[in-house]
Image (cartoon, rainbow, N blue to C red; front, side, top):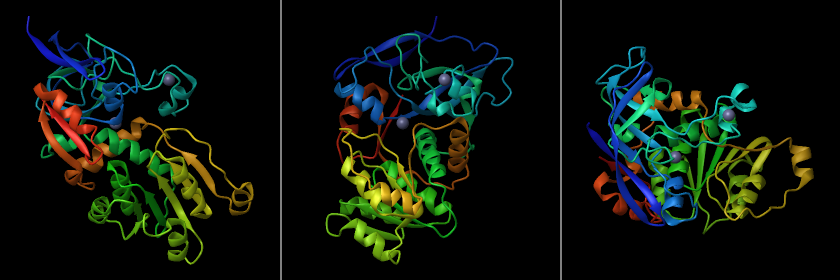
Length: 343
Ligand SMILES: [Zn+2]
Ligand SMILES: [Zn+2]
């Protein structure tokens, strides 16, 4: 019996490796040899104990190579580079059935590995259902393909922002998600204004294609956005920073008929004041975005495969799976973008 390694979080800041039996894929299964798995906020929260669910097989942003496929698989063949969709929906609830599986009542928790719950991407191999395996371009860097999932989250968000050609779009916060929003908003034909306190991150915003940079520590961002838009306010505003006061700013800087999208979850979830009359008279839409739908995942894999989105600047480091602790420690530092774990 041959086995492979899976990294599991057993407690706060405590990782271990389990051996899992390597099987042959059945009819609609694909055995994927993992090349890269990025560390997202979910894994950081379990690692630091903010979310307490142990043992947990983390890693939901993964890509690799299909090494064996079941008899009934038609979408991929052995040797294909693939991205995998690991946070899945139940398929049975009201929202899964009406085409909004990102709102699934069971939320997005996977059981990919036999040894522990969780998406299980911090591993050497994964046995996947063919439906969750997306073929990538032959020439793609697999550490880039691993960012299909975060890009898919941003695709869903940008769709909720309903950007039109020539719109003024504001992105608040230039972490990895803000950076991806900038690239997507540019693809949609917008003028993009980036708001951020950190000068280094504003430089990244520039590289991502932002047209205008606002250092919100030096300039009042609401006033500045109004000035830049002849007093109208922006057509779409995306708040990617988990600070409630910034959600308030996002609402304030959105103009008539504009869309305000709360991309991030907020910690703490502090209520904000909104003028009902502003919403009444401006017909402004305030919405959120959570998780990608399958079609967002498909779009993200295409954007990466076709090189329409470039994530090379957003990978801070690549660390071997054997040093998973070092990788997680590095990921929780505030100044890193994505850390990629590689078996
Ligand atoms: Zn993620
Ligand atoms: Zn469901």
